[in-house]
Length: 358
Image 1: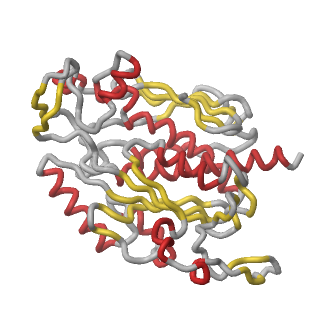
Image 2: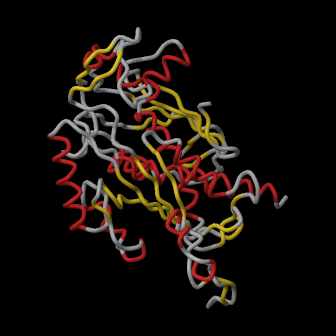
Image 3: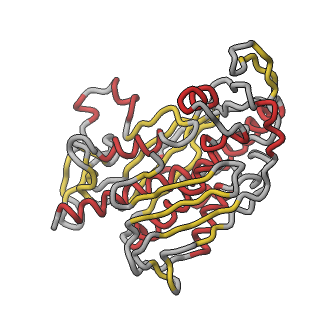
């Protein structure tokens, strides 16, 4: 399937080395003011060539809105958009036409479909996530009006990790360094590690932390469409993602219930809140009004600029040294993608809640 969401839906199309990447957004509310500067800024956070830590591919990634917006506002009709590819170097992939890159989608895609676009990975390339960032940016425009803010940042690269919780960091620091880490000292250490790995023709992974603030109580479903399950599916659908956890996650298994339970207390505004947030803002599959905090683990990029043993499509052993331009670490450019997927999940659930209340 190439469509994500139930009411707020994004359908994407395009390949890494084709004419462009685009999509159609269905379910966008009418009358929302479209901030094109914000939309383009979100794409600029994802685009290649933005620093020495990313791929050298240079793309403008300028979005064209084809429908669904009139005089600066959404019309409620499908929003069609396109981002044209401008800097493909398809010849760099000629030596991969009949060879399977280790831990890449080449083998599985070829086996399933019997054909694949070897140029930059075709449809399996992370360049497809351009469309997700556009869909997420439109969702953010709606959510900001509802007081919901979604922020993500790099919290670990390799063995270099932040040591404190998200509340101890100033989110305004995230965009001040190319790693997108709110701790300036750690960001320097992470950048140094990425540069060393890149110089060695290798790659490295890490963790992105996401925080959703201002979410009301009751988003999600109590059984099959639990909110954390939806967020998990959204994150695990991002290229190179290998793990997802929310709240205390796996670390919570060593605690006792008396240590882990979030005790309810009266809030200052006369409502109900909790003293702690070990649950990560979700209980019983529904948002509980606290911040939703989650972490997404990214593996090292599969394409290495060094020799690797592999096989060709006939099963013959060969040695592959990939050419082209590739990220040594996806995390800096994946931060806006994580935010975008979270934004679409939250807006979709807002709209589903409105249906249930009718």
